[in-house]
Length: 268
Image 1 (cartoon, helix red, strand yellow):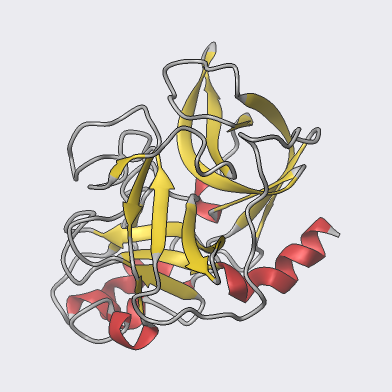
Image 2 (cartoon, one colour):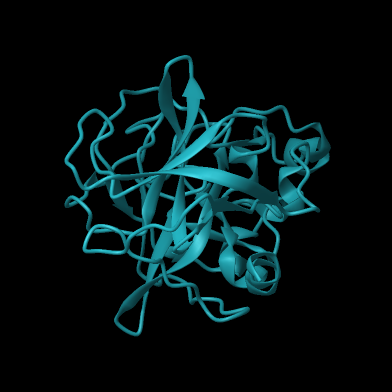
């Protein structure tokens, strides 16, 4: 999910093109724009990150199970003091299929260079250490991480998955959705008529047309097909202040391959 923030440090970057600041996608009211409802548990590494609200828990972000007791998500999802839980094997947030595993969180590790007031700085990545290990089965699997520094070509096949808004300001779907977001090459995404300097080389872009991530999708994976296998090349981070699926403002993701060493250091 993307959070609506006033990012004053970006003013010089965006005012030149008269476009609004990027906004995080972490409001619990929004979903994948366009796309389709995914086949239940077809993305078995996708988790729902939830926080305690009174006597219940509410979905706020997505994430990826990368080890039996580790989840990868966006820093902006977890930079507040809340009681967190992770649900793996989830499909419909409003019903229990019996496939879900609900895990408590022991510790949260946010990248030390993360700065919530400067989205263009990057480092929007966090790891959550679970209190116990997930039982792997047909509905709960580990997401595959890319090799260090791997960058995929323009138009590489990728999908975003999440429980975010189905349209900017629109209705929500309780079921996990997927949307085709082909990779946008860094040269294109950083051109002046696209995102310009708001996107750094530790970010990747996907989409830029009718389909996009939206509020509620933050922290979730960008699943990209490489050599016949899906691997997680992005962590959903931000969209345009004009709207989630603004043309030439593709969904921006933290580039996972830029942080392999950092993740190994934290988990080891």
